[in-house]
Amino acid sequence: MNAAVRGALTAGATRVLVNDAHGSMRNLLADRLHPGASLVRGKPKRMGMLEGLDGGFDAMLCIGFHARAGALGVLSHSFFGHEIEDMWLDDRPVGEIGFAHATAAALGVPVAMLSGDDVACEEMNGWDSGVATVPVKYARDRFAARLRPAAEARAAIEGGAAAGLRRAAAGGRPTVADGSLTLAVRWQSSSVAAQLEAVPGVTLKDSRTVVTSGTAPELFRLFGLFMQVAAARTGHYPYC
Image (cartoon, rainbow, N blue to C red):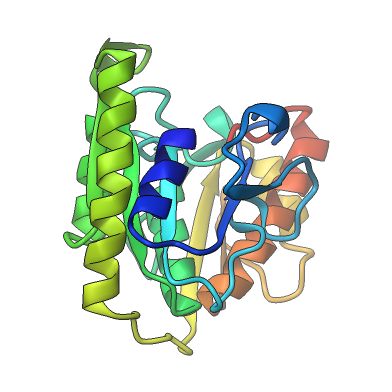
């Protein structure tokens, strides 16, 4: 994280906000975070992994992301481990990478850089070839990888963050999308889907797949509620 902050400051960033967004969302050591950044920590958060993001930011950096459920990438999953089998945004398969990208774009914020394994980087490039990607490991299977040396990985993240922000600044902001999108989520448990059908605007496509529509930010926030319902119903909790 500090490597990414250093890269952002090198590229001219005047304000850096870090959102701790994995699991408990209390992973980063606040006293060791680069002093040029402020930290959003803990949960629940209304926008989860994107808490604090708004149109006042010039870019978003995605650090430590992973490929979507079903991909043969390191720790691949879509938010919720085994509880979510697949997701689609306007009929396009999507995971955390695509959903975050679509939501940021809807707010007028470009994604400048992503780090993760090589499979996650390929997924991001499929959504937006203009994003700088930094593979810090190369998947051998879902729980095995060849790792880049730590110092090399940090240097790559720092350089990628700086290059990505410069590229994003040159490319300008994405057109803010006001249109409605359709989100479909296929759960492992038909019970979760049945409970979610009670949410206004949510319908069942089949016994395990729920469908709803809205703008990307609206869907991202509503999806956070989906995960809370699923956690309460199954006793399992989101990985993020």
